[in-house]
Length: 126
Image (tube, rainbow, N blue to C red; front, side):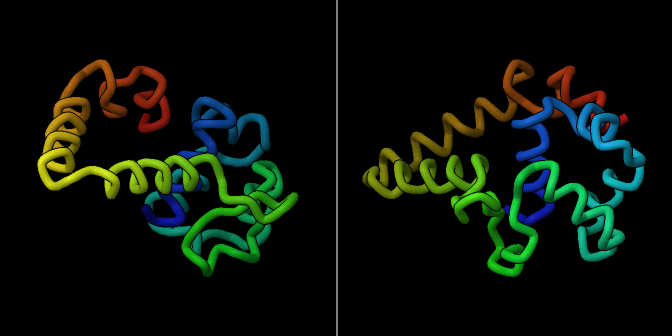
């Protein structure tokens, strides 16, 4: 998962939508949306500092490839979920891993669980 994907996931976890986050922070939705799509390295430094501070994330550790909370260098909720899922995956035998992948594919194709069909996500992509 890229830094941008982790950042968006953390925004959605804490604020519910990118639009709600930008409104709360007082920055342009298109500015943040562009950074999330094209890379935060292309965004203004002051904007990204504000974003990371608002989410209580440590901007100095982004080079490590994971987001960390500022307070105690703990990984973000999205990074913790990723690690938990991988840990569970590797505990399964080959048959179990295949079943998990099939089940995950089914969930992604489902309108109920797919972010692309989730009404709260559609507003973010507008």
